[in-house]
Length: 314
Length: 298
Image (cartoon, rainbow over all chains, first blue to last red; front, side, top):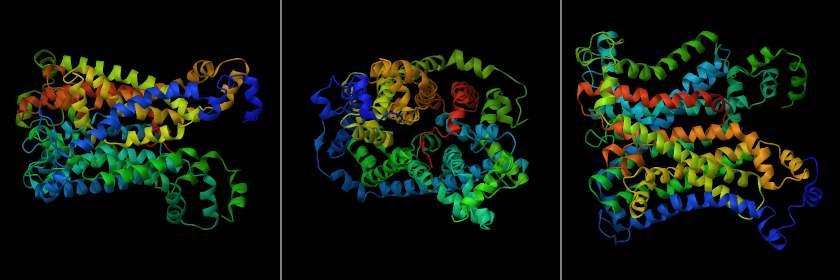
């Protein structure tokens, strides 16, 4: 700032209007509150209120069209004893950590090759980002068709072209391959976000650090381990936490590919929430499914928000 | 970093090209880099290639598994069927209406809000900034049932207006968070200069900051548009009338297990993807510069 704010303010003549109120609410309180009111309304009406209502509904028996009956923690206790629900929790963790792990590795590979000396760097980057921007439903439908047991192109390639398999596999209809298939689609869609974030982080590392390390005799691998990785530590934490939340709550891919089947082998919590609410019409129990891991989600969000704000301030 | 100073001095004389090479972290060798890029590129593009090819194939060809990778004969029948025999045109219109209106709403609310949170000094600013960010992180899978109950109470269930009003639950925090970073990157001196020249704070925002932020605002609104365009869960739950569906829900409703269904499903998928790709061509440079959802430095 070229001019100290204190000397500037009288000259601007606009902080006068506030008087005593400005001392309490801050110098820009009028325009500030005016500009922030719409966001505050949106947050209250579309997130805060629905969230509180969800917590209340999760403690009721609520059938569609009937008033809710308060039952305390009964829904949660019943779910805890329900084997199908437990399996969905397990599946959700498997789906999330499997997906995030592969996305992390593939994203790192993507960032590293895009950082090396290649031609048409921006074209390559642009192409590799496409799965991230394409409509998820379209991608899921594409893979539903690719994975098709009898007419799908994946089986055609593996059986007729490369002759790796003797006969086609029902990728989404067999319990053994269904989970791996939905994870693969989630990874396909999500790894470019990891890649582009790592790329941005790597570009922000000052070249001098690498040069200094090279002068000190560090090998390429050592430079990666001791310069690159520490340099993108914060971005990695942010991206992993963000992707964990998104993946855990991913509904579209699993719903379109398997609807949780076969036999519940890919039933994850968001799909179970939907099925319980609109298939079985038990709203209270459905929301209890959605909110079951709320403490973990809340903790993740708080930690993540802290890192994201810290990243901005620098 | 004891060698940092010396290293800097000697390296700074190098050509920019040499510097770039140095920065190549764990420098992947040329041929390996291209091989990896080619493999990733194929994996990324194949589903879209396959979707396009399928959309021009006839039922006989799909059933007989002949000439897998090119339509023969090449036919536009799927597109004709899609337009004349399904509700696709209505869905397209619905998607345009919902996405455009909710984007305008989110951009207006998000732009002024982001400016206030990034620049103005008032009590509660930090709290609101945190609240907005946390809101952005709350997943829709928690909110869709209570939001549906709310929308129903307001008599907006099964209406496009209900979707227009609920999409800001994810677009507003997103646009705000993106633009806060953008406004923070504009030097504060510019506003101060305008105010010394007699502009009010609002005048400085409207005449100086807003034009400077226009590219960022456009990018954020395009992002919001693609998010609204791609949204699936709310639309699936809130809309029951088949004619009022948006594109993602409409397309998903084509899944019947019928062979011929794949032809027009894929032609619908092609037409649904096109606007997003158009928006993306403009957005690409912002994404590469790191103006993404997780947008952070270091």
